[in-house]
Image (cartoon, rainbow, N blue to C red; front, side):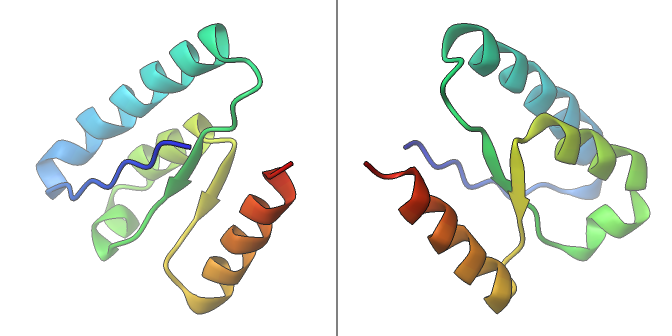
Length: 82
């Protein structure tokens, strides 16, 4: 599994959302059995709701860094392992 960690300024969030959609399209085309999972965190997304919506739509599953979400992420990984 590949993990990508990005920090984005407010001005770059629109570009990041569009990029994630493009990456999602490529992953689905060339790696159809792959799940594209994203972590979204930061208050900047609260004022850029349309970009947040685009990000969420790009991923197969979305997590935050809240403790309950980390537990859910761990469970997701365990379920995906053979």
